[in-house]
Image (cartoon, rainbow, N blue to C red):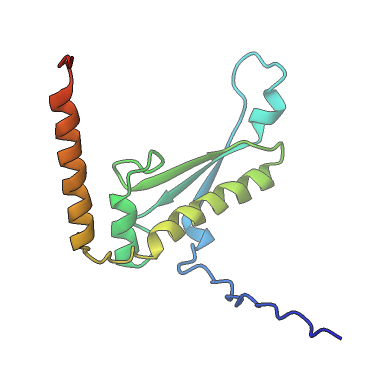
Length: 149
């Protein structure tokens, strides 16, 4: 009789709750109606939603506000207003939820500060390999164009 194989159980990490929650009362939604002569896309466009979120007037922590304002994103204008457009579905409620989820994703990205990276120095071995590669390349370059008989 053989012993059962031991299996490693990967430790399960608890799902982290979002660090900063957005207050939905601070978010302004605008329903965008179709414009023009109409056509096949009229229904789809008529449910489009524009979400506007003012960073300065929000209840977010100051450090998160600063990182949001410093973030290079085309959805954040110079006045500190985030504008997210959603028109993926025909339902206005689903577009609203989609836009809110994308705003939360944007805030979550800046809510956790980046970890400081440790400055690494090149090791002795890596320096030697670099120098060897350099000398080999210089020998190859020096030998180019020379005809040997």
